[in-house]
Amino acid sequence: MTTKYGMIGLQKSLKIFHKMTMFVSLYLYNFKTEMIMITEWIERIKRKHNCKAHFGNDSFQMKDCIVAPVHLIPEEIYDNQEFDFYVKTKYDVYLLRITNNESKCGIIYPAKLNGIIYIVSNLPISKNNIIESIQKTLNRLEEYGFPNLKNSKCKIAFQME
Picture 1 (cartoon, rainbow, N blue to C red):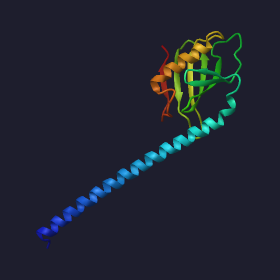
Picture 2 (cartoon, rainbow, N blue to C red; picture 1 turned 45 degrees about the vertical axis):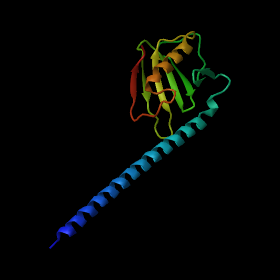
Picture 3 (cartoon, one colour; picture 1 turned 180 degrees about the horizontal axis):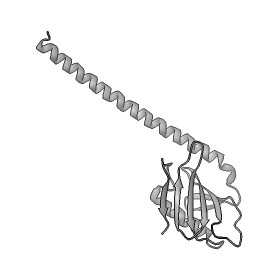
Picture 4 (tube, rainbow, N blue to C red; picture 1 turned 60 degrees about the horizontal axis):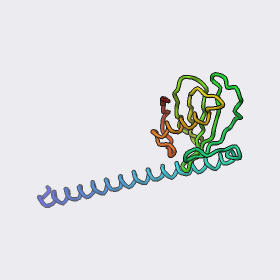
């Protein structure tokens, strides 16, 4: 048989136990969140280190980033011809692919483990306007956090206006 005071003591103990459990759960959640942030930071550092060789004499400054072309730009650009550029910000390194077509849309693909965030932009381009097309794409990405574009869990489609 439990006395009145024994039941009150049990209820107080359960409340204290519940508060301790909540505290431990919150602590573990914060620890897990911090570990994810540290892991993402390490991945960004690795990407910047691995892509360092791509930024040389042919790189150019644009806004808050450095852009390095992967291909030489020919005089004549054909439909659906693709051109890749590494884009380095203070935050991360991205691979930008500009495809010559009229669809005026794009997709941001998340980086896989040890990968790179991959941005595809479809715009009508020529040798004379490719720099403006890169600028237009980077301006459009500001809505999604660029130049501090974080790695998303899924691909993000966007329209070029």
